[in-house]
Each structure stands twice: as structure tokens, then as C-alpha cells.
Length: 281
Image: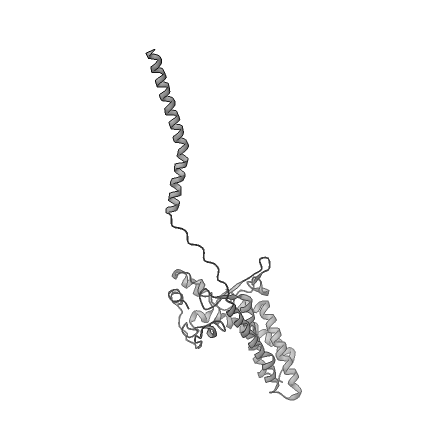
């Protein structure tokens, strides 16, 4: 009888111990999950991604207004001005030359001029293929416009608006040449000269002076030299000093009332990026 009781007691002990171990094994994943949850709660929450900057309606409206004003400066203002400088029989010819040259340069600007002037390439020319026929400025599948940088951090405008704005200046610059050759050149020769001058004179100068990657490209002090090296030649030399040009053409000068006095100061632009990082416009 004693042996039987002892046997039963030992058997019950093993059974109880097995049930306890099984319960511990079942609770182990729950305990591990609780520990991981506590660790996750202890970790600092990741910073949410900054939303992409969106263009301000006022900036876009003023840029479009400025574009229209420059257009009116060319056709009809410049055409009528030059038409009044020539003999009466050549007035209509002068009006036609200004109108056709303005239209021709606008088309050339959209085909390859903008790409040569305002895309990353070398110190003298931009890329011929980056914005050829304005590709990449609008995504038809997503219905989204590409954005162009300004002289202010986090301030952008639709790139097509910038294209149109710069196109009017490229066209009126070529039209100004007509005053020097009024009544002195054939119409076909004028058009041929304008194409060559626009391609090999205006676009490289525009790239060398005005092209840079924008203030948002200066993300840290380590990339300053790299970003500066991608700008146009005269921009790298400091032809437009930071304190001399405080506003992009038509973007910030009128909106914020800043000065926009341009003067040449050929000095190395070595620390422009650091200044932008410390005190953005």
C-alpha cells in the first residue's frame, strides 16, 4: 500500500511539473511580444517625411503677369518702336521681322534652347537632351508638373512657367538685334543669323551666368563644393554676388521688396553654400 501511494505521488508530481512547463512554453511568446512592444514604445518616433514644396499661387500669378508684360514689350512695343525708325515703305517689313524673330526664338527655346541654358551640363553649356522638347516638365500619366527652384529655400514655381518667362527674354534679346540691321539685310539672312546667334551666343551666356542648382540643393556643408561645381562658369566665378542679386528675376524682387542690383565682381564663390545653410534667403 505504501509503495502504491509513493508511486502515485511521484506520478502526480511529474504530471504537474509537465503541465507547468507546457504553460510556461505557451506564455513565453506572449512575454516576448510584450517585451518587444515595450522596446518599440521606448524607441523615439521617426520624424515624418517633409512634404514636397508646392508653388504659391501669388508667385505663379506674378510670374505669368511678368511674362505677359515682356511679351507686350516685344510685340507690339518693340515692333512699333523699330517701325518708326525706318522709312515708311519699310515699316511693315520691320513689324514682320520682329514678330517672326520673336516667334522663331520662342520655338527654338522650347526645342533645345531651354535645355542648353538651364540644365546641368558643364560650365559653358547645359545638357542638350535633358529638356529637349521640354520633356520632363510635365508628367501626363500622373498629371504633375515639374518644379523649378528659385533663390529662396522651399519656394518653387512650375517649371513650365519659368520656361515661358525665360523664353520671352530670349526672344526680345534677339529682337533687339534687328534695330542694328534695319533696312540693311535680307529677311532670310536675318533669320539665319538669329538662329546662329541664339544657339552659340545667347544660350551659353545664359547658362554661364544664371544656371545653378538652387538653394535646396545645399543640404549640408559637405556638398557645397560639388554643387558649386555644377553651376555655370561666371556663376562659379562670382559674377553675380549674393549681396548684389537678392532676388530671382520676377520672383522675389517685387514680392518681397528686396534689392536686385546687378554688378560684376569676379571673385571665387567658395562659401556660398555655407551662407545658404546658415542664413537662407
